[in-house]
Amino acid sequence: MIGFEYARARTVADAVREMAGSPGAKFVAGGTNLVDLMKMDIERPTKLIDVARLPLGTVEETAEGGLRIGALVRNTDLAYHPSVERRYPVLASALMAGASQQLRNMASVGGNLLQRTRCAYFYDIATPCNKRGPGSGCSAMDGLNRMNAILGTSEACIAVHPSDMCVALAVLEARVHVTGPRGERVIALSDFHRLPGDTPQRDTSLETDELVTAVELPAQGFASNYTYLKIRDRLSYAFALVSVAVGLDLEGGTIKGARFALGGVAHKPWRDAEAEAVLRGRAPNEATFAEAAGIVLRKAKGFGHNSFKIDLARRAIVRALSQAARGTPQSQSNKKIA
Ligand SMILES: Cc1cc2nc3c(=O)[nH]c(=O)nc-3n(C[C@H](O)[C@H](O)[C@H](O)COP(=O)(O)OP(=O)(O)OC[C@H]3O[C@@H](n4cnc5c(N)ncnc54)[C@H](O)[C@@H]3O)c2cc1C
Ligand code: SF4
Image 1: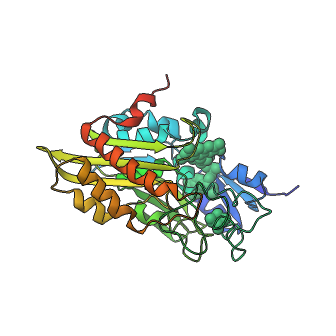
Image 2: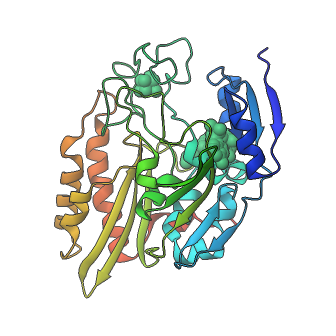
Image 3: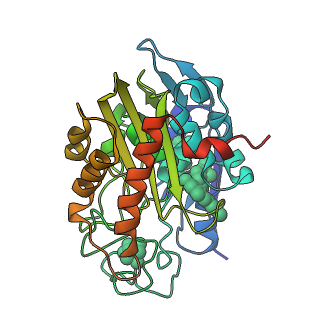
């Protein structure tokens, strides 16, 4: 049995102070990822600092016309929040495409941002894995890598970030508010998750003593022309092979603005500025969308079992952009459970 301490933080200041004085500690919110990792002996925190009861569970309007979402808002509550459903439906759809109802009821926004990869070898402590044991090697590179990355990979790691929520947050250009012993700071979502490089053990740019307090959405929500398309092995309760979040701004039959991000293909939600730029000022048709997909995937690299993802991603991008342009988002049909 592996022992660890437990403390419950009552205020944000408490949580930060407790963490600063406890090397090797970890925050725990819903526990749906961290507790599994502890049971499997992948994470061994010396102490759990329970942040689940901190007053970070609200969604508030910002002065700039956006939303500030507390780090402890549950995934279900966020997906069904009236302002999110109405103004940021791509986020509601992405949240509802993730996990199961029970998990979404427990999972927090902060925990979803920081969930760890689902690479099979990361979970198998009998095998080498640079993310789990830096310098030990990467078993996925020549192994069973069907779920692994095709973009932004390194020689050390080809893992993907498994979140659905974060793919939508990338399209919405969310900002992550964090606080720690050195004060508060704001991290653009695009800078929050890292590429593996030669330090795959680090998933994000968050320091180990920093607490995520909120995620802020700007006013632009793409409420009319959006989609979250998730391609997976089963219709529910499965991680994405490839997913695509889209937000389009259309005017008189022309694309005025376009954002899209891919999930399931890289160590972070994947956006490509050049591919988005090629859409602007063009007609929303299949040829234009195929050109954008070609740009995103020009540097994609398969590792055997996952090579099919390159063509899958190409087709998913075209389909998702077409759905968004038509205003017929894929996942609306299965969004409402009740
Ligand atoms: C069977 C299964 C299927 C799943 N399927 C999907 C899926 O299809 N799509 C998807 O997106 N997700 C999926 N998930 C993942 C799920 O969404 C995450 O487990 C969940 O979002 C994590 O949130 P949590 O609050 O439980 O985090 P926890 O487990 O409590 O914490 C996760 C990590 O975040 C850190 N942390 C938590 N809160 C904070 C904070 N405020 N500040 C700093 N650090 C913090 C913890 O220290 C820990 O490292 C699945 C999970 C399971 C178990
Ligand atoms: S891909 Fe990354 S997480 Fe998977 S085995 Fe290789 S180093 Fe580990």
